Amino acid sequence: MKEIKGYKAFDSNVKNLKDNVLVSSLEYNNDLIQSKFSFAKNIEDSLKFQVNSKNKENPIITQVTGLGSTKRIDSEYYEFFNLYNSSDIIINKVLTEKEVIEKALMLSYDRMERFVSMYHLNDDYIKLFKNKSINVDLALLYFQKNILDIYKLYYESLYSTSKEEEIKKLVKNI
Image 1 (tube, rainbow, N blue to C red):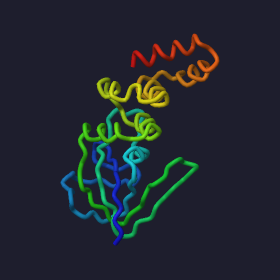
Image 2 (cartoon, rainbow, N blue to C red; image 1 turned 30 degrees about the horizontal axis):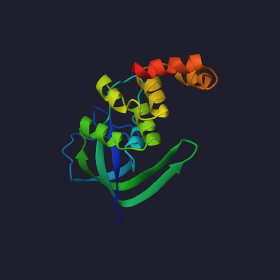
Image 3 (cartoon, one colour; image 1 turned 90 degrees about the vertical axis):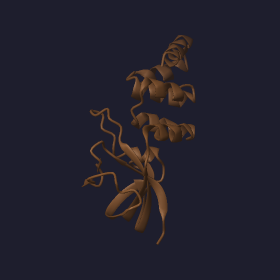
Image 4 (cartoon, helix red, strand yellow; image 1 turned 30 degrees about the vertical axis):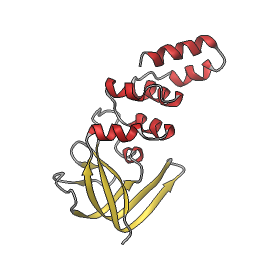
């Protein structure tokens, strides 16, 4: 039996939107759950099926091990990679919000950008991600601070020093 480690996100009701499976409690640590589950190799990709723009609650993220019949799924069209469907999973650990943030801060900048675009951060956590890279800063401004014209300003700043100064002010005030 091939084991693959990864992450699976549940909403605050411990329901996974992709699988439409309701787990009655989180006391499944190290217990085998038999069903068909999808999970992601990367923590930020586990958020893809949990994003709900109307709901500002973050998902519950678990570390899992996929067992049994497991198939890798990649889709360039939907821009997801390293996702797996598995006949069986073990929920090894339910991550705290602090643990999720600590793991996200160790990601490469492109993965960190994806993370901040899908995980709701409070102001203290936003400060931890600030100034990591221009792309992370732009994602923070757009997705966390709801400055919807930030990407337009950024591209205009490539040709205008006044727009560049405007971007610097926005980033400074994150």
